Amino acid sequence: MLALFFASLVRQALAGQASENAELADQGQPALSRAAYLTSRAFLSSLFENWESEFLQMWAFVMLTAYLFQRGSPEKYPDAPAPQDRDPALDAGKAKAPLPVRLGGMARVVYSHSLGLALFLLFIVSFVLHCVNSALAADQAQLHNEDVGGSLIAHVAEADFWFESFQNWQSKFLSTAVLIVLAIFMRERGSPESKPVGGPTSCHGCRLAALSPSSLVGDFLTEEGSDLRVSPKTSTSALGREWPFVLFLKAVIHSMT
Image (cartoon, rainbow, N blue to C red; front, side, top):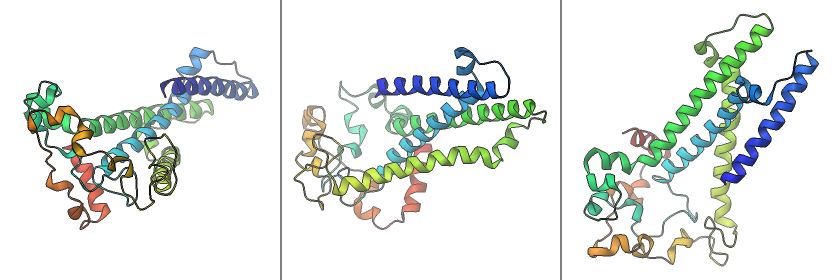
């Protein structure tokens, strides 16, 4: 995936430079060098605009799948305690446990939600960088047209900025939703995101059903006779009594605490 990322990034830079220079040539202006284009506000704005939507998509997927289930999805855990819900305090004395788990206290609490926090932080950083570079790019265009540039706050209030963001956000949420729904009915042999080809459509978590909770977590959790304990907040019966909007708010608040 990293190789595909870098290959796509290089192609984006080359195509973007060619497009920018063609536009400058039409205006009778000198072409930009490779270094000048890569540090231009227009390129950085478009770059962070896409990163922002990706990190938002991943954060939303990680957080919402901690609270919501899609009936028939291969991601839905079978009717057994999920090892992800195990109380980390039970593993504090294990030598192979991550350091924050062994330290306990606030370190363990933060580490328990570190994935969601990291993705949310990456989204915020990308959003800010997109906003700043988009505002500076707009200012440069206005100055070129002999208009007065606006402030950052004024740029955030403009429809153009939010159009740039929402056109990416909606596509990311759509692609995730499509993957979740299609995985209920369709198969991809060999993919960990698919149910077994011969598995029934109605099966929830079919790709996990063949594994017991102890085998999923391996010898690490079964050493010293440890058992699996599930936090009451993850009970599927409790989830069924709450509206999705309430669960979404809980996911947001949970990631911030």
